[in-house]
Image (cartoon, rainbow, N blue to C red; front, side, top):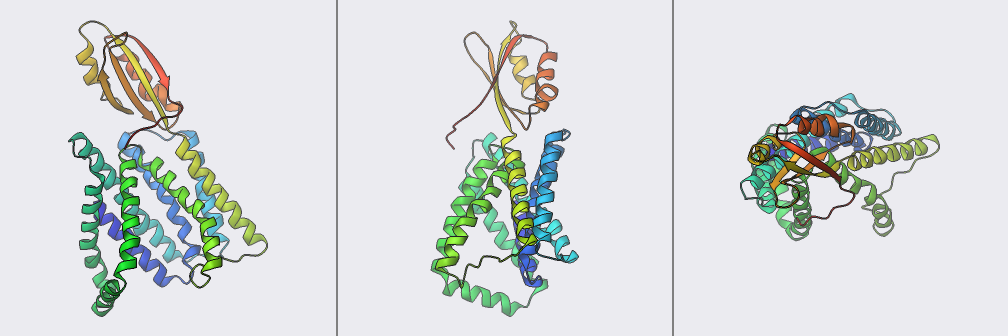
Amino acid sequence: MSGFGNAVSSLGYFVLISIVPDPSAIAPFTSLVIVYLMIGDMIIEREKPSLIEVQNLLIILLGVMLVSFSKGTIDPLSLLLVLGPINIGSFLYNYGQRRAKLIGRSLGMSDSINFRFWSLLFTALIFPVLILPLTRLEKILRGLYYSIVFFVPLAIDMLITFFAMVFYIRALGMGKMSIVNALSSTSVIFSLPLTAVLSVRFPEVYELPSFEGALLYLRIIGIALVFLGIIAIALSEITAYILIKARPGYISKLLLEIQKIRGVEWVSIIIGKYDLIVRVKTRVYSKVYDNIIRRIIQLEGIEDFHWISVLKEWERI
């Protein structure tokens, strides 16, 4: 699934830059894949969106529209291409990688490099099948020829990308798809100063867009809104630990019941004042009571529990 989604998204991107004179006018709508991922998280976890989540999604949507409209008119066909194959393919890629990571972790085979390798392999096998009906064979052979001629710089570039995606896959195994993708999207913002520097050194390769008057302000406001919406989504995730004291004879039963609660990552039996420790993750505090605390209160066999919210956390990955 991940390889197929990656191939579809990549093909959609190449079609976009081939048919649209100015892809930057429509490319900002790829940021809406965060909406797809958040909807996917909600469907998978069977929960309704909170007000703050809806607000953040609307802020991102408004920002994307301002950035795109500042370039002028938008081609409906290219917009459908982004909202359809490109974003759906990105969603399938993220979901497939996260699913594989979670399954692998449960089986003791959580190897992100292995996951990335197989994802690339399936992408490489599926992509030519998808592209053959859209182009001539001679163009594909020419592309293979140039990939051999420029193998060294391409290999260096792909090696850096490979390990960057390995860390991305590891992150997907640790957090929700929408949160991880929101954090990775901030790299676009941080790359803007680097692009400005490179445009001075290599003006024939890196070119900064020029805007005047109201269009410039629209684009700046749009970028700021997208950035703020993405950061708000990324910072909305809550991590906490619950210490539970069980009544005699209920520890094993509670271990099985608590792990079924949505938002619970793991449950451990401990020795000391408390009998169980639970790690939970949820997007906003408003869902803490409905999804977790109310369910725990209803469980038979709990004598007392203590909630501990996490401010900062470090984890070796």
